[in-house]
Image 1 (spheres, rainbow, N blue to C red):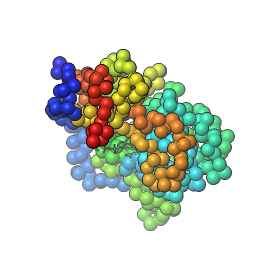
Image 2: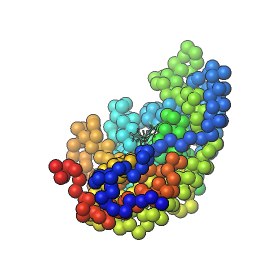
Image 3: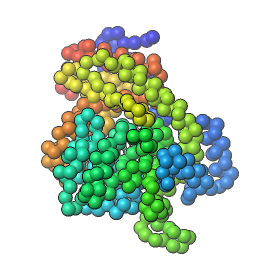
Image 4: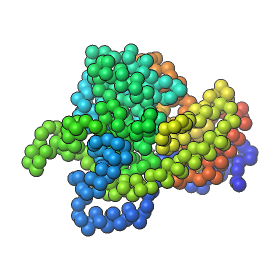
Length: 402
Ligand code: T4K
């Protein structure tokens, strides 16, 4: 098998990129093409493209049953789904969220004039630290948005207890967590509602898409109206709404992907186990684990770099990998609190987020999914090991050299 044997061969030095084609985090998985194309023909024949069409209805029913909830409302993406869920739950004032998340979690609040109050994470789980949440509750707090980062569930019971004790709403951003479980129950059925993303880069995609799942009948009724401008009938608007509808084409992709769900998860799992084997004995590299009796989708391969041990920092490693066409990503650098408008609103906020600040400098995501083979993973890990065993020569990055 082809490998890198010498640092002189690295693309960052004198060599050509190891991979001719770029390997991405989030290369879309594609379900059964034939079934998708058949559905496309159907859509064209029926001339029903959006507005709660038959494929959207079928998609919602399949997902509700899979997740084990009464209601699944499909949407055009998870960001709009979050915004609508936030509005449907009546959140206002201040809402507690992690900073260690994709910016959409915070924006879905700020977009509606609600202040996201950033809470630190537990460094061992990368999820909200319940102990820190309690310290941030004020008379203005109306809710908590927990994020199941990398698809690993938040401390759901602890968050639920805090929400109950303080009369707060509890929403989960489950963008990463479709097909996962917690204590034997599928993610999607916790809190007041949960929101999934089916963006192209998610292991289960509808091109763009998302959904709110809930067991709350009244909330579901409102969310359904809100995602369709508030229309309750042809000429009747009941309250303010937006356009969050999923198209038939997206639902057709979702149904075709759903038929291949097990296969996508098996490939992700296989890739994860291979990364785990390859990186097992590499000092200073910790692979985020998915273990235990629960279901996971294994869609994020995330490593933490302990620079004290590796003697090379995360950014330099990303730079070296990207030169080899391994497009590793620094999710979620630099943390929402360091991005605008939040950085200007709360310039000192980082002081209260020591674990977030530390983690955003240490983590990177590596390519996986059906577009990545075991040989690719062996080669990626081979490059990482070569770099680490020559860290002293490679540690200085282009900026420092200049
Ligand atoms: N909450 C959380 C916790 C989230 O992580 C997200 C989204 C959301 C909410 C909001 O969900 P949506 O509104 O998007 O449904 C990506 C995704 O765009 C985003 O959906 C995702 N999280 C986030 C973690 O990652 P970017 O800005 O890194 O995407 P981008 O365009 O760089 O894509 C990543 C790589 O994937 C590219 O380098 C190339 C490859 N790619 C991408 C697309 C779109 C392809 O190969 N084919 C494609 O079609 O955010």
